[in-house]
Length: 587
Image 1 (cartoon, rainbow, N blue to C red):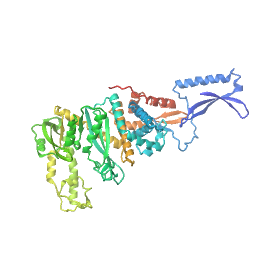
Image 2 (cartoon, helix red, strand yellow):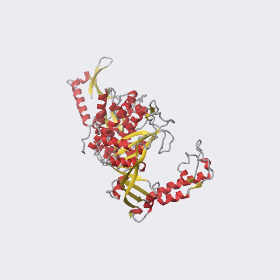
Image 3 (cartoon, rainbow, N blue to C red):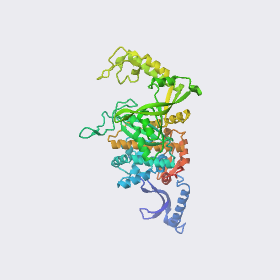
Image 4 (tube, one colour):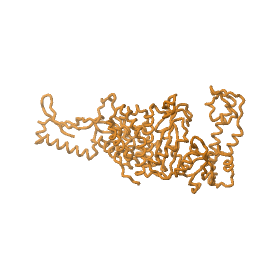
């Protein structure tokens, strides 16, 4: 607060109290607070009225600062209007995400990258906005740019700058993964003794495949990335596939994209090879679902001096293996009908070399088989739905075609389709009773194969069960981060989009671990979104939400977010503290 000398229209001088503040754009403003009086009248009471009230203004200002910078009362103008384009509500919850961002030294990474490329716009600011928004308010890149003012701090870059930055991010995707793993290992303690791997796909709302880049002889130099292939959601649109590698603590280590029409079976080698090289990994046990359980992958794991734990199909296995599964004498009974057994088994596998599978390699693996009543109920429930659909198909074949009969057709004998239209051409259809009976016998049985023959059945099963974390990660990317459908067209921008999704996943996983994994990621995101403040008057803001998760965030990081009224400076101090990296607590 300060004293200002004003003149009336008659030339008479008066003293008034004023207060300085910054408006929503950060510009310095001044506001009338209170009339003190005319100087000629005040001279009858005070020897030097100007000096007296300036000293009083300093005292009141100091008192106000001791009380948190908040005045005892705020004058609100009832006639005030909301101007077009003005913003008075801002998110502050992103400060928790920003804390992890700086702990991971992402700011240093992008500042160094910008310096090396002599870029004038801020790569750091652009990546921050894209990451914060992917977690808190996922949208298209255009919508993200248009809503960047929702965060309390100002971010100054153009839409063109943002799209240019995507190209830069794409080129640095491998070096950024390397940087993240190094910092995570230093600050969180990455456990790479076990590495979980899985694949998923993301669809694009287009009808055509990307063209391949070919040479003059027609040889493919680089395949287009958006291709129609096997969609786990059974969508007809072109897709792009992602392979994700996760450490034993549930924190993503590396990822890569590959064309939608490429088999996921061949995706493991490149990403694991890069991870072992860039992260300097020693032996790691690769854990994956049965889709990755191939002869080539097993051979690669062994020749790379790694181990593996793979799911093994039971229904599609050899008759000898099925006999072993159904043989009851060797099972060990556990709780609630669960039973388990294992054996060490020698197996010959055929390795692809020079385009032919002529090389036979003998491997020794431990085969673990278990039976779960819950799995049995689930298998029966899923099959009953398909059988019911198969019966309807048999009775009403005209209702179905090759696409709509998916799943049910497996239980119909000798079904045939028109190659052009996809319509069912044979009318005399029968239910495949033998297939149903065979499946019923195997309901509830599951198998795992591993190179780790010295580990117990319980240890192997426990290792395999950790695969749910990577499945949950894909759900987070698709549901919470709304990564699909993807509205980008160039491969560079598509690659950058999924890089942002990957880093967002690393950040939210670490945040989840730090504030308590008992809180779901969905609930954490919801709470951070609700941590907002509204500009009341001058530079005074009001917070209006507090919950259990925000209380933990406040206690963990020392953020003052439960105080209802705060000044701009107090909030800025909070955000400044969120940019201070925590000293590494693990080595």
